Length: 114
Image (cartoon, rainbow, N blue to C red; front, side):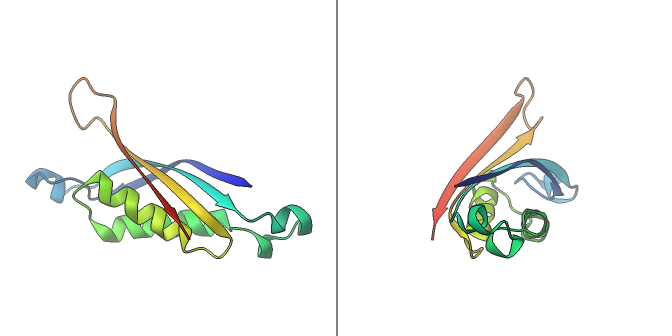
């Protein structure tokens, strides 16, 4: 079963340039989770991923990490998600808009399995 969290906005320090180390920038995070199907049968939150809690955990992880590279941010998001009990696999796409003139966004994607 697949669960997707789309367009999670996270304001955090991201980037390697000196000016990027002092001012938060917005990242957009898309997460695709492969989860067990227990909740499909039970219809119970206890049998699935609490995506509100997971979104808060991902935001805190990125805010605290102060990553230099998008690749690191994507890795942290995916590994945070795959640590959840009902998650079998997680793919995280982290996008930074407006980083380069004439480029809509730069993105990194990382997948992790339990």
